[in-house]
Amino acid sequence: MAKSQQTYNKKEKEKAKQKKREEKQKKREARKAEKSPGIDFAYVDFNGNLVDTPPDPSMKVEVDAEDIVLGIPKKEEGEREAFDPVRKGKVSFYDSSKGFGFIVDNENNEKYFTHVSGIIDEIAENDQVSFELEKGQRGMNAVKVQKI
Image (tube, rainbow, N blue to C red; front, side, top):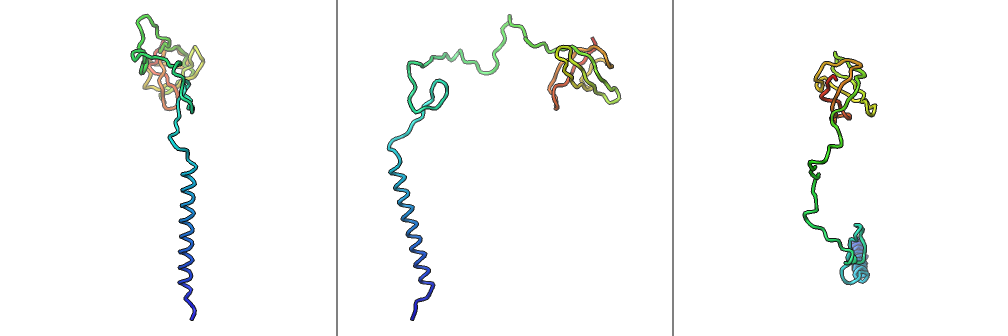
């Protein structure tokens, strides 16, 4: 009588599993042999680059903790503010019914949007005005607009 096909398949599957286990074990041993003994180090040189050699201690720079400034340094009394927030310009367009317009800056000829909520005095086209800039959704907006 012949053996059933199922037992043959079971034996073949078991042989394949055993072969996979042996291959896995060989790969694991090869990786262990390939690794160098000890720990690899990475150093940071004085320029902030990663290197495999330790940095030269003679190039070490001493820094006092008091010299480190976190944030924006405070201005001294003698220092003047470099940027003047109040700018001057000319109203190129203004629609009072819709409540918005545009102002052309005298210094850089940039056009800035202005809204009725940022206007202090009544303005009309071609009026000379002073204003400040504020960051808006679509760029810089003119606010605190006053006639000169």
